[in-house]
Length: 86
Image (cartoon, rainbow, N blue to C red; front, top):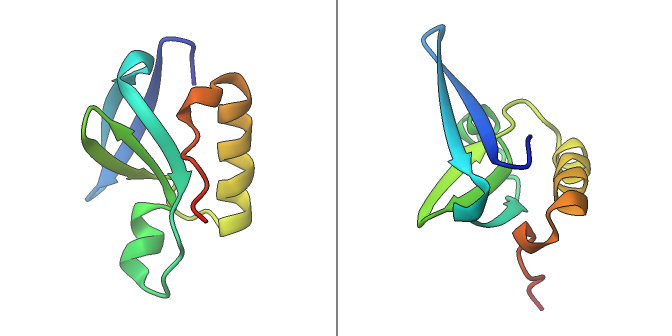
């Protein structure tokens, strides 16, 4: 994480693909509700909305680890946190 952007690396069939999401285009970040499916864990529980594109990242994290990472990010960038739903 830098002040300019969030970089997300996706591994697909052993090939790494790096995507860069400029900080000014990230609208919100949140931890997804965990579902007991392999696909959810594979994609990751962390989500970001960057210019209308929702991206999953943080594959292999537990919900607690994902929450801790999100807290670390939004402590620097509080405008990324999704409003808590009632």
